[in-house]
Amino acid sequence: MGDSRVTRRWVLVGAGTAVLLGAAAVTLPATASADPEDLRTRILAGLPPHVGYAESTGRLGLPEIAALEQVTALFTSVTRLRTRYAGPEAWRVDELTPAGERDTYRLGGREYVWDFGANQLTVVSGETPVRLPRAADLVPSELARRLTSLTRADPVSALPARRVAGFDAAGLRITPADPDTTVGRIDVWCDPASALPLRVEVAARGADQALLFTEFREVSLSTPEITVPTAPPGAGEVTAEAADLAGALRQLDAAPPPPRLAGRDLVPLAGGLPGVGVYGAGVSGFVLVPASRGIADRVIDGAPAAGGTVVDVPVGRAAILTTPLLSVAARGGIRRGGVLVAGTVAPAVLDQALRELPGRRP
Amino acid sequence: MILVELRLMLRKRRVWLCWLLLCALPTLVAVLLATTRLAPPPGRGGAFLSAVVSNGQIFPAAALALVVPVFLPITVAIVAGDTIAGESSAGTLRYLLVRPVGRLRLLVAKLVSVAVFVLLAVLFVTVVSYAVGVVAFGFGPDASLGGGGAIPSLSGVELSPADVVFRTATTVGYLALCMLALGAVGLLFSTLTDSPLAAALGVLALVVASAAVQPLDAAAAIEPFLPTAHWLAWIDLFRDPILWADVREGALVQLGYVVVAFGAAWANFSTKDVTT
Image 1 (tube, rainbow over the protein chains, first blue to last red):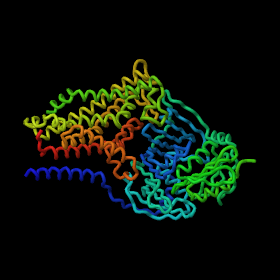
Image 2 (tube, each protein chain N blue to C red):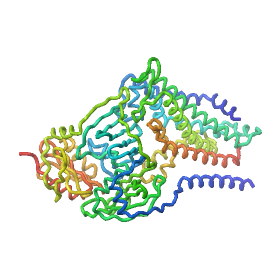
Image 3 (spheres, each protein chain N blue to C red):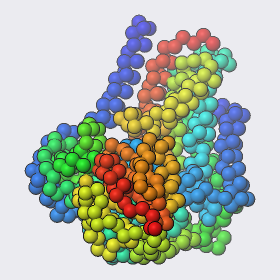
Image 4 (spheres, helix red, strand yellow):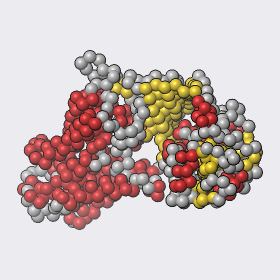
């Protein structure tokens, strides 16, 4: 009798636990379907206004690169994002960290960056044709828009639907055709009614698991009001021109980018930055950025410990850091400083680019 | 029964010592920061710590971020591990059960006493650190004469004093729930052993194991259900507007732990042979 009471109580507790776990794990079935080509076209046509909270996970295994820690963290860890998007010129994305947040606003042709940790509001006027990746790029809707625009000509196919943030989302898969790119597939799930991208997965060629995926956990199709932020009392406020970056790069006395590197033509950039070059198109392109000698040397010196390889170049030193999805290379001995080269291309492409770069000015 | 247990808890010296030590750690940090003015660089160190030097009213949030990961769980483990096992090891459990009260009522009373302990612990840390914060760092640049001014949220928007009180009260409630979940596990362990130390160590082992597994990519599927996964979600209460997603999920997970652990404690204790 006593034993049966014991058993009954434990069965009751076990059943209750199972019910709780089941309730947490249950997801509604997803049945949405849409023509993938049509869905891609609608994504490219523009994003609908939305407000949401997303999480992005990067598993690129990229080693920490000196002076670029914030950028590498985007591809190697979880980034929490809150977005309010009213249009291409009126949006706000907050990067939420355990120690504060870094908010980027775009409004009236200006960008505002509020950094709680630094206790500072930065107002940036203008735009540069090339910039470093930032947290706002990892919002599912924005990442999907960027990646689909880079792979317009690549084949697209349908994926099974899945439930994302309460939406019955239709999926599409883009398979980049260029054999030189490391990107094997780009999977996007969208709300079929509004074409709002809700989840994006990027996997390396030949890999089953995505190395970068970002997903809305909550999202609503409402139009947010974006207002100009003001610095709270006691906080600093600085103003910068995006063109200041060109000035900073000019200080490096970088050589003009070669017209052709690793078999790829230099892409003309409006209002170009000194020494900066974009080569090739879509996800099989790469970018060349001048760097100070200190940064280039730190990357080259740290490469062997980070699993990178040293590259023999005619002048100076060079090294390549490779991950299944992203390759990063550095070369010193270019004029007074060095260069960084990065892209979702095979390491062999960057290796060739490093060798083709002209060395120190005689 | 509940009042008896509460009175018993409040008479224990170790309970007051736990509260004292919990308040002492943030006080020590405030003294160090105030004397050196060396706050952690932006983005480093505990949450809010880099900002407290310019506004002492933020210090309660920084203090909670300091005590939540380790010190608060240790005190909860000590108090919860002692609930049943302490009576057992002291030889008073048999006499307790002789009284005409059911074992379930005794367990409920013990859980309530743990709940009151964690609530008061979080409340004491909040109140003491507010006082210490404004003494050490002042009311901030926006302070009105002789009183507290607004506090900037993590998003840069200023929070009114009423808003700060609401958010702080919600934080206290949320953290108390998180610690109550740990307390319920401690209560369960306390019914499994006659040693309060073993029960407390069991709770701490759970915390350490959860914290160790949490960052692993391979544990992504179970990560949301780990007891420590949502402990820092309260920081979202100081964003503008409040981000409720993780707080809501965290509250549900912690409630789940309370229900399951208390259920298991009841299943075990109701038919346990009490010989001491």
